[in-house]
Structures are given as structure tokens and as C-alpha cells.
Image: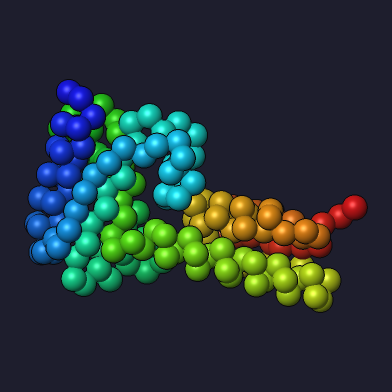
Length: 169
């Protein structure tokens, strides 16, 4: 099966699942994630082989996205399992509902940069809220672009969060 056929199958599985969840799909597409795109999507860290972005637009996305994207992450995992069962191979599914991923990246980047500016102004370290690995990665990347501050993850499991502090000389 070539990538185009695989992506069509993945899109069909996605649309069927969302239909069973009583969501009417306004627009949807599936495409391979390229090396250039991987930083813009979810936790596409490492290899981009067998990674497919499935972008869906629905009229009321809140229930699919859930609090801080938790429902979205769960649906993404379920889709990956369904695709594995159908195709017999693992495919990393990057599900995006109503462009949530891009908006989340922008929001987290601004939040991390604003907090880093505050740390620079006060000289006192600051902690961010608990976050997923994907969210922490976005914040670390935002802070790494700034002079004079650094970030590190602390805590374990669901308590893992970022601390931003003045960069030591």
C-alpha cells in the first residue's frame, strides 16, 4: 500500500470514529508529516517516517479537544490503535482539530517568553504549571531563543513542570 492509499484509509477511519462520536465533519485531510513540518506538530520528535497529520474541522470542537487537549491526545491514541489494527503497522497519528495545535503552540510560546522576561526583570526563578512533554518542549524552545535565561523540567509524571531561571555564567 502506498502512502496516498494509507492516508486515505487513515482519513476514513478518523471520519468514521468522529461520526460515531456524533461529530459532523466540515473539512478533513490527511498528509504525511515532512521533516520541515515536524516542529509544527504535536510531539513529532525524531523520525518522521510513518507519521501522518490528520486535520479535521468540526462545528463544536470543545468536546473533542477537552481540557488542555487531553481528549485530543486520547482520541489520537485510539486512532493510532485502530490504524495499527487495520493496516498491520504502526503509524504515528498527529490529530489536529480546528487548528488547535498551532494555536496551542503560539499560546505556550508567548506564555513562556512573558515569564522569561519577568525572570530577567526580577532575577527570581519562576515555575510554570504542570505540562505534557509536548507542551514543555514548546516552552523550552521558546526560552532557548532568549538571552540570559534558561529552562529545565522538574518533577515526575503528571507533576512535571518547567522552571525558568537566570542563566548561570
